[in-house]
Image (cartoon, rainbow, N blue to C red; front, side, top):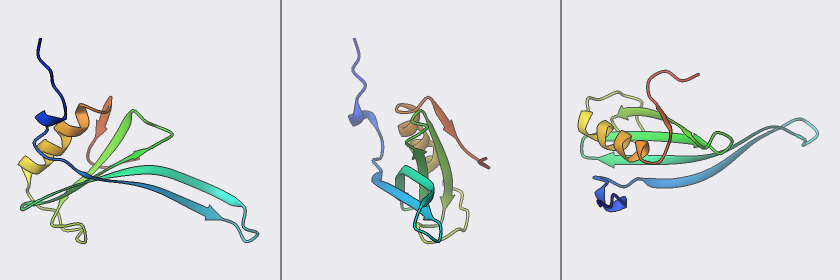
Length: 100
């Protein structure tokens, strides 16, 4: 028997839980977004992944980018592959590229 656990991941993300709300003029909630962001950084760049808690089996991957504060795409194949490997162990569906 082989145990595959978190120690097999080649990198670990910073994980943040966020809630965004859109209110109308009367303060009533019109939209509600409850999501978790996964931030993967290394010397080659940055990859972010987002999972909305109403769709817990799906995660969207963005990047690789130059940094957290840059929208400039970079070639960071090893970073992207490590981030996807981390996410594939945790989610049924890992989406990359343009998102709906």
